[in-house]
Image (tube, rainbow, N blue to C red; front, side, top):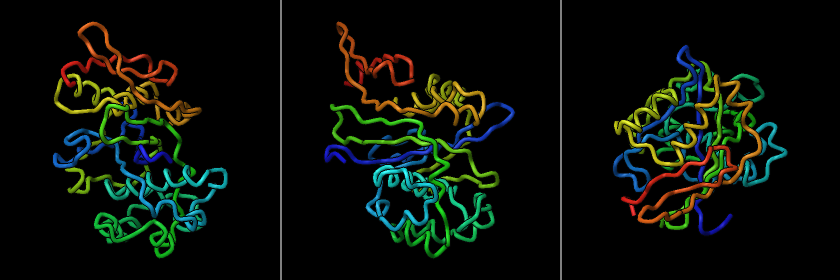
Length: 258
């Protein structure tokens, strides 16, 4: 892992509705130092505990994942639980996700995570859980551009929401939450009623191409690492990404922001 980048994971938790695919998103607290006030997917930094070798015993079908790949996925499971109370896990040895009632019985663990008083290995052992890293489809990989002071190496994952889990923001890092269709999120960003930063918006646009959750998961495949770059054109300055990354060929005018 490069010293220049902070490893991070974020998860698109999605469900099918009559209006199309919806994704769970949270509004970050205005005092957070990155993307304050923005509508984002649940996610955050990979913790040291997410790399614990003992977690392999609680992550079925992870034998083909490297230590780093597994840690990113474990972080995605943890952050989803911390930020929105959706636990991407199964009871030890079971095939189905744990139920909402079982999640509710574990509520004290969410408080412990938010207070930085728990790690995923302890959680797995004491609650007898298997983390559903095998159900996380690799959706994207973005690195913060060079001109930014704080730089992240972020993997995006996509997963079908457990059927009866109720997503709700934690009230600290995130202050609001919503199930929203990609079309509505993009329209709100265009209208200026929601703040959605460039990488999030690009991944919403990518999700919008899928007719349903099955199609979104099926579309996950070889992921191209994206690292936006600056392109000048006369008096204008644009944020660009490579055209082969699966996001089209966006050209974001950032002249005023520089």
